[in-house]
Length: 166
Image (cartoon, rainbow, N blue to C red):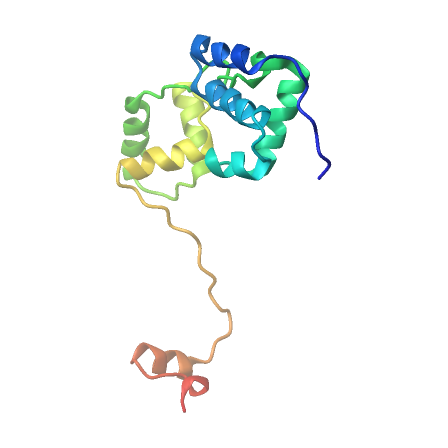
């Protein structure tokens, strides 16, 4: 990896003031790492001290060089609109429908939610919420079309197939 020098943007004293002014813990950590580097610590030492990878330290240097301490602020992340809150009644209604019988796949459950509640719920959310309601996922298992009936009977009785014998 090429050595990226830290630009002389701020003095160590100015960086310490930036730590005090910041309300973002991730930014404070990153500024402290830059301070350590400016004080002569190695990147490996800084990575170990802050329990991060050397790659993270190098990316912090790059961010600092490009945009100063403001660039070291951690973004909020996540969805701009926030995490959707799903009404539990929707899933309870789905559970009542499932209890009527039939085969219910996750895509079929999503379709039912779209048709009856006008909700476009992600597959993972449907699976997770139905698990919370004590429904379990059953996956299809392969069934051999042609099998050795004798070996199947021996296996059912607790006997081992010949290739497992000594």
